[in-house]
Amino acid sequence: DTAVSQTPKYLVTQMGNDKSIKCEQNLGHDTMYWYKQDSKKFLKIMFSYNNKELIINETVPNRFSPKSPDKAHLNLHINSLELGDSAVYFCASSQGLAGLNTGELFFGEGSRLTVL
Amino acid sequence: AQTVTQSQPEMSVQEAETVTLSCTYDTSESDYYLFWYKQPPSRQMILVIRQEAYKQQNATENRFSVNFQKAAKSFSLKISDSQLGDAAMYFCAWMGVGTSYGKLTFGQGTILTVHP
Image 1 (cartoon, each protein chain N blue to C red):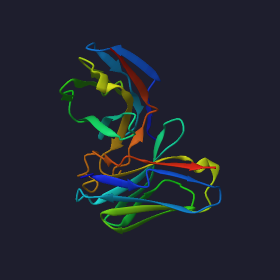
Image 2 (cartoon, one colour):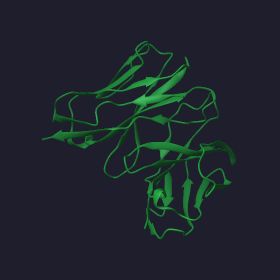
Image 3 (cartoon, each protein chain N blue to C red):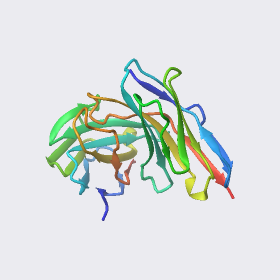
Image 4 (cartoon, chains in turn purple, orange):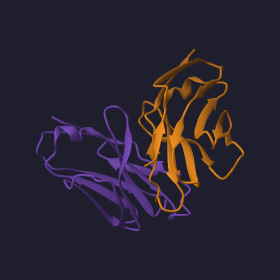
C-alpha cells in the first residue's frame, strides 16, 4: 500500500491549459507539502498545509492554488500553464507541528508535468 | 536565508569501496536538523539519515554515516561497502527546528555512480 500517492505520474499539456495533480497519504500525518523539482533537479518547497490550514506559501505565482479537503489529501491546481511550469512536482507528508516535526518527510513518487 | 551547498555534482565509486559526499550549509540558527535524501532513477525521495544539530554524536544507519562539524557548518555522508543499489542522486537538506513546519532547504544534489 503506497504511503503517499500522486496522480497522475505523468502529464503533458499545452500552454494556457489548467491542470490538477492530486495527492493522498495514508500515514495519518497532519502536515502535507508540495515541492517542485526543476530541470536542474533543484528542489524547492511551494506549499505546506497543517490540518488543512495553509502554513507555508513560498512566493509561488497565484496561478498555483493548493487545496486540502482533509488532512489526508492535498491537491495542486495550476491555471494558465506556462512553459516554465514544466517540472516534477512532489507531494510529501509528515507528522507533527513545529517543535515536534523531526523533519522526516515521506515523499510521493512525483508527477512529471510537461508544458508544450 | 539558509543555504545548502553540495560542491560535487558527480561522484563515482567502485562496488564495495567507500565514498564520501560533501555538504556545507549556512544558517544563523542554533537548532536545526540536517538530512541526506536519496533519489534513485525511480524519482522517489528516500530519507537516508538524519542528524540533530544539538547532538554531538554523528548519526549512523547501517552502511551510512555522517561527519557533522557544527562549527564548520559541514555535513558529509560516508557510504561504506558501496552497492550497486546505492547509485542515485543524493541531496543534503536543512530544516530549522520550531518554526519551519517541515520546510526543507535542499542542496543541488550529487549524482553517485557505482561501478561493478
